[in-house]
Image (cartoon, rainbow, N blue to C red; front, side):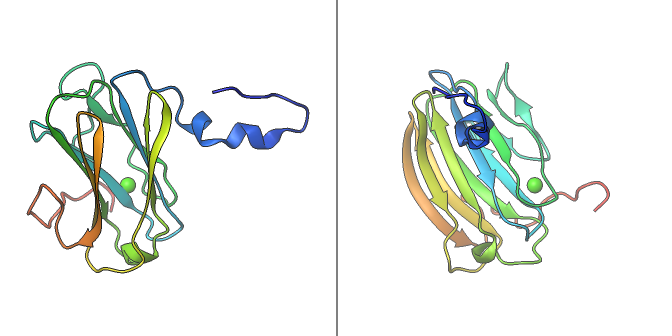
Length: 169
Ligand SMILES: [Ca+2]
């Protein structure tokens, strides 16, 4: 992208492309952001080999599973970013879990942006209706994204409704 630097052009600094810088060929970056409540939403990615990248296992950028979570934000807004550093053949699944749960997902203001080497390719907004603590958002195969975008009691790939506890919470 091109950034035009001018005096007083402070808004240029806050563009999404600056938050999620260059994504290389064969890579995908998934950025979750949300509102003030619930305080803690979590990003979850399942790779084609069913490796589960989330706060309990942040993955790795330079080794299998070639996907990693940068941070587990627990204090509102995000962003939480999962980057697939080398897209493998097969199907990925991406979901968001409402961990703190003090407000329903439908009122979270959550948004997920998907970037590849050409920039922002998809934006998903949380559905305004639906009950459950999982927002199942999309699957991806060979870079082709299939929309799911539904709130449910279970994730796309994990029938266990209990997430491991977090330290200090
Ligand atoms: Ca989180």
